[in-house]
Amino acid sequence: MNTDSAAHRGAGREPHPFAGPRPNTGGTVRRTLLRTALTGAAALGAGLAAARPATAAPTRGARPGTPAEALKELAAGNRRWRAYRERHPHETPEIRRALATAQHPFAVVLGCIDSRVPPELVFDQGLGDLMTVRTAGEVLDEAVLGSVAYGVLELGIPLVVVLGHQSCGAVRAAVEAEQSGSRLPAHIQYLADQISPAIDHGKEGDARIDATVDANVRLVRSKLEAEPDLAARITSGKLAIVGARYELTDQTVHHVR
Image (cartoon, rainbow, N blue to C red; front, side, top):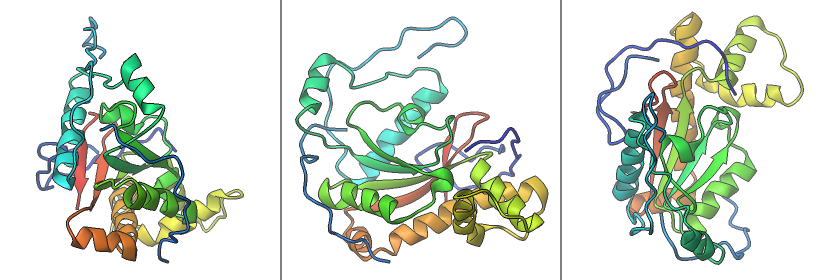
């Protein structure tokens, strides 16, 4: 979801593989999933004003197999995106034919439905690289939990990224509904109810909305980390669940601790 308001944020985040220093702008998983055909093998731009042709990698390299390797790959892709040097990888006829029979994505990205934040673009990844789950405000329900669990438990994905973003309309709606005491239409109220525990009451105005974007990422990440099957993989070092935020103003993805 989106709004036209962009909040400005203060500095002070720690560095993270997604980006350099942070910019100033601003129940248990039910393992009843069928082991279907979605298993497999096979891994995971435009120029400045005078467009430079994009270069697509002709073949797929080794799939990142650890959380650290997966983070490194996403960070590199976001750097390409920010520099307008996208590769749009893994789109060749050969790769498309291979993916018809198997997939092996290296990361799950749980992001917002906002049209300005498509994970495959902001991380410059291609076919078969990412398993994306998108809900307004990254809100969790059983279908979302099952989707994330499928990627991790059935496909062996080593990284889950909870990706919030600057100027999130779902977060704004939740904050403003709480302040006004009004009810939102139909199912939108459900979204607000899920986001409301993350509302930062220590700030006012746009600063409250902006801080709540980060707090909501932390809340969703903590819920995922509390799922026993996912927690076991975290403990064994096979999985990392990280929070991140995308800045619309400069296209940077940075860590949310």
